[in-house]
Length: 113
Length: 232
Image (cartoon, rainbow over all chains, first blue to last red; front, top):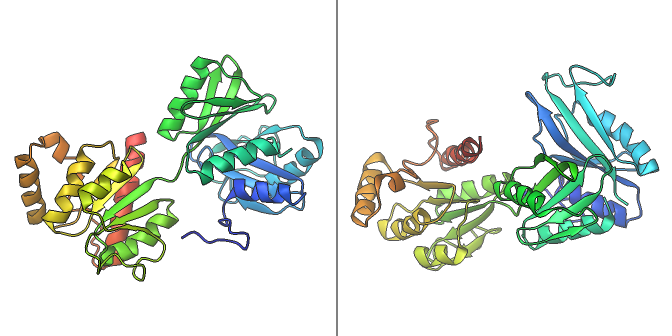
């Protein structure tokens, strides 16, 4: 059985935590890998939930870009406007982080309203 | 995402029903699509719904270019299933490994001494005869079947049902000699070579596995390989 946290949710269950955090009255964002190019650590559809305090559950890479996604999430939790983030070796958007594996990913981040 | 949409999505998951969450990248508008219905703020044409359902069926999340815009389809299917015939020692290792890998595991063994809650605490157990049990489970394209008893009167009925279904993986424990004999019996029962070739036997990847746990690794490795090589 997968590890479960106190709430009975699996420790990597992004959707379950997003819902539980929202119901507890927290600001929550959901990040989803919507496209990948080349080698990328997590496949399309991988998800991460982020709460207003910066807690995260799930993953969108092998740990390379999670920090940047959490940072971006703060603004999205505030504004409610979803955003498509792009990460890769090309660094077109001047991100300070990239994927060491040389892949490229697009991550869609939205607020849970 | 609206909290309502998220709740509905989780509700489908609890009920073990497939659902696709469709998101328009431009504005985040969303809709839900099931094999028979669609719902939500983002209204989708029949053509687009068809494309979404194809992805849901194939368990393939991804972008589609549709009349409604640049859409992302998140395919959320219930867990894949692994049906094991034989509540034997290898099964005790294979069950937790498969569960960690995301499978719902079901064990069939009509021999009451084997399929006990003590030996298999977190698994669905059935003591029905394998063919009957398999038919009740309606194995589909997201199901794998592995027979582990070595006993033709238990393994063969399960294999017979598996071969008549869309299961993505069939494995049968036993040596080359055992497997050849098995293939002979299935031929006599009317199965063709192509059908019989669907059975992985001897089961598992050739990694020199010896212990029950190592054999479980080789079986789960082969199931994973079959799943993803078929999709590629």
